[in-house]
Amino acid sequence: MAATTTQSSSRPPAQPSYIFRGHSAAIHSVQIIRQNRRLLTGDADGWVVSWNLESKRPVAVWRAHEATILGAEEWSTDKIITHGRDSALRIWQLGDGDEAHLSKVLPADGSGIHRPKPWLLHTLPVNTLNFCAFSMCREHRDSTQQQTASHAGVADSILVAVPARDDKKIEVYRFPEEKLVYVVPQVQPTDTGMTMAVKLTYHRPSNKLLLIAGYEGGFTAVHLLGTSSQYSSEATTDPALQLAQTIYLSQPHTQPILSLDALPDAKVYFTSSADAVIAAHRIPELPVDIGYASASSGEGISELESSSIGPSRPEHVSAGPAAEDNPRISTTKDEDSQSLFQAESLSGLQAEPSKPSGLSSLLAKAAPQPNVNPKPPPPQQLTIQPPFQTTQTKHSGQQSLRVRSDGRLLVTGGWDSRIRIYSTKTLKEVAVLKWHNDGVYAAGFSEILDSTDERLSGLSRLQKQREVRIQNKHWVVAGARDGKVSLWEVF
Image (cartoon, rainbow, N blue to C red; front, top):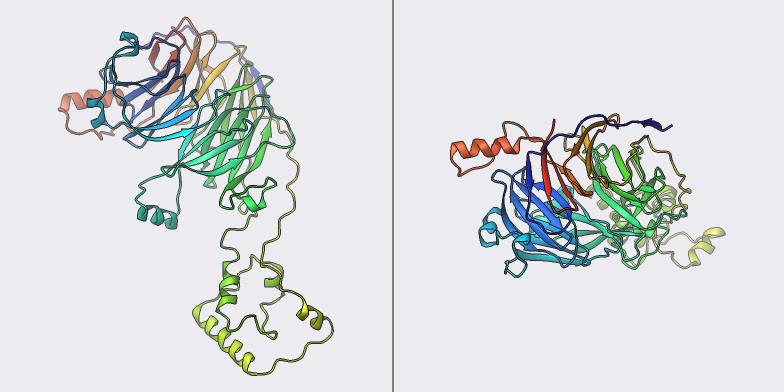
C-alpha cells in the first residue's frame, strides 16, 4: 500500500551563490552540461544562452526558436539539442571551439543585434501543443549493432522521445538517422488525456528500454519498448517499426502531471502535478522473456528448406512435430549435421517414396501453408496500481522535477516562487530555497563528479584548479518568470 506523509517546511531560505541576468523573458529551461562547465538557459522568446560556470559569463547567445524553449540537452561534447514551441526540435553543432565564432551579447542587451547561430545539424517537426518537452537517452547497442554503426560512420546514436501528432501517443526517433523507431500507443482502455511529460531511460537491472509518461488526467504509465509491431494490438504499415507494451499504470494525481524523473538505475521514478502531491513509483519487475519472437526466429527454417534439393521437402523427411508446431524452434544445425541431412535428402530423392494413404494422402494434396508465427493471445487488461509512496506537500504546482545524478535528492520549481529539495528515499522536504519573486518554471542539479577528476587541459595550473573546484560543487540551478536564473550550492 502507498505510504502517505504530510509535512511543512520550517527552514529559512538560503541565499544564492550567483544570479544570472540577461534574459528579458521568462526562463523555461535550465541545464548544467559539459561536466558542470556550462549552463544552458532558454526563455519564452526562444533565446538560448550558454554560460561559463567558472567566469559566470555568456559564451554563446543565439535565438534557437521562434517561441518558448521547452527543453535543452547536450549530445556528446559538441552538440546541443533544443526543443521549442514553434513545433521544432533542433540539433546544433556547439563545441568549445565553436564558441569563439558566436555572439556574447545577451538578449536583454538588444534584439536588433545580429547574432550568428551555431551550425544546424538536424531539424525535426514535432507536436508541441501540450507543452511536453522531449526526453533523450543514448542508445545501448550490442556488438553487431555497434559494428554496423561503425561501418556507417556513426560514432554514437541517441533516442529522442516526443509527443506524437495524436497527443495521446508518443514517438521515439533515432539520431543521427532521424528515423522513427518506436511508437507508444494510447493507453487502453483508460482515457488518460494528452501526454504531458516523458522520460526515456534504460532499466539497469534488465537493460531494457523504458518510456515513462505522465498524462493530463493525472495518470502515469511505464511502457516497455522493443515490441515487434506484428504482435501489437495496434496495426502499423511499417514492419520495421517497434511498438510498446504498457507494464504499469497509476493515477496518483487529481490534476495534470507537470514533470517526472527517475533514479539513475530506473528502479523508481517520481511524479509531480498541478496538485500538491509528489509520488514515487516502483518499476515492476521485468520478465526475462517478454514473449515476442525476434526477427530471426524463422530464418533457420527458411534457410534449411532452401538448402534442400528439389522444390519441396521429401515426404519421408520430417523436422519433427515440435518444430512444426512451434516455429520459434530453429532446425538449423552445424555444418556436419547439415551435410548429413542433405545426403539423406538425396538418397530419399533417388529412392521411390512410399505412397501415402488415409489422412497422409489428404494432407499431401493440401496446398502448402505459409511459414508464419502465430499471434499471441491479446494482453490482459491493465489494472491501475497505487503508487509506492506519496507525500502531501501542501504546495500546488511543483514542476520541473529533477533527480540528482547520485539518486539521493530531487528538486522542484514551484508556482509560489520556491525551490524545494526532497529526499528520494523518504520524500521528506530537506531544503527550501527562496529568492525569486515570481514562479519558478525550471530547476535542475549539477552532475556529481569524482573530486579527483581533472579532464581539462591547456590551462594554467591555477586556472585549472579553480575550474575543477567549480565543477565539483553540488549546484542547484533555477529559472523563473522574472527572467533571472539563480545558482545555489547545496549538500
